[in-house]
Image (cartoon, helix red, strand yellow):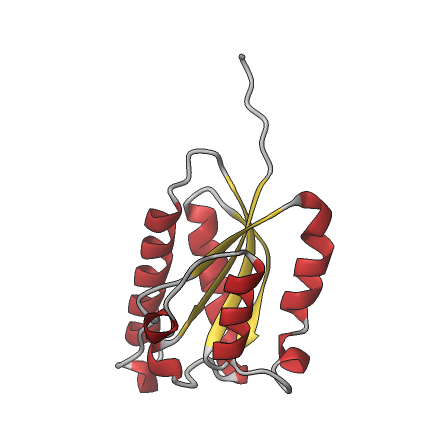
Length: 150
């Protein structure tokens, strides 16, 4: 085939180390813009990014050659370094080691966009830990609860 066509949509979730409340409302747009740019540098397109002071959600469209683990290592590493180097009080900032990456079918895009856009409302009733475990269960991903939130 001479042409390749794809629409690879992934919902990413990860938190700050030890769920520290680093992503302050006054700074979140700068941090989100940086992460959006890092995704673009790797050939991805962020559809929506939002979160809470201790975690973020990203819905992105990826090119077929993307290796997700390399993409996330690059984005998390470069964003951590930028945050530590450019935001005075954030010299100890870091993201958690792991992440969630969940495939999204095109028919579910609008519900995922709405879910990500409404994080503030959603977290009035649910912790990040409960949310992440719920996402794993919804995707039928096996996990050991002793280690999943470390």
